[in-house]
Length: 259
Image (cartoon, rainbow, N blue to C red; front, top):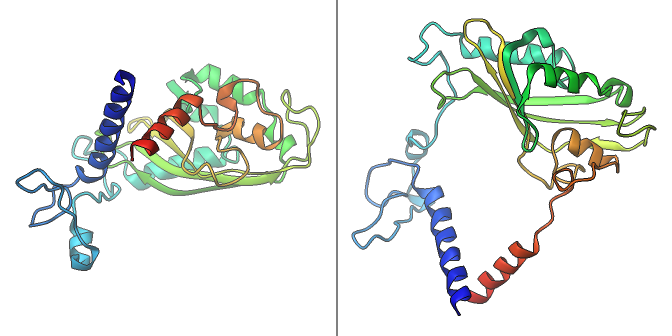
């Protein structure tokens, strides 16, 4: 009974956190607006039939990307300049790595389970994989470029990456022979942080998958996802498709029984 009570309490906290995550991020005013609570602390819903377009478009929960340098960096590069630098970096290598001369000495690279890597470690790692030989007709796809409006420095360019291509050559040292398989990447959120003064990249993040049901990489991003799609996954859990743990399955089962 004690264990059951603890699980029940945890489930209640999870439910509260999920609700608060969706309703506490607005400072809208007016009776019955989402995120407000009544006198007895009950969340007040907002019917979509009572909202005007002006209500939606003016709500402060919706934040537009930067259109000019933030007040903290009045003489910084414009969002358009930062985005152009980001695109130039990606174009130098079909979006896989990039020109090392565009990286600052303090550069770091990170993925969901990789890194942080220094500039030298990143350049060495990228240089050890001959992606062009493995995918001579790879089609990179990048979209949604914008500068983060919430980071004080106003110098982080976010974008979404996809891409597809047929494996027509060896991908050493992971796949010694061409598999003939086509890789279809899921959408992955990436970012490039750029120094306002030098125009050099100080941080690069990739591989954060937003929908694991898209593509054929098992929900994995980056090189791990490509190897999974080729049937050559690396031999550790982080490079495998997501599977529900028995602990999580048990927790969900208890939750369904309580409901």
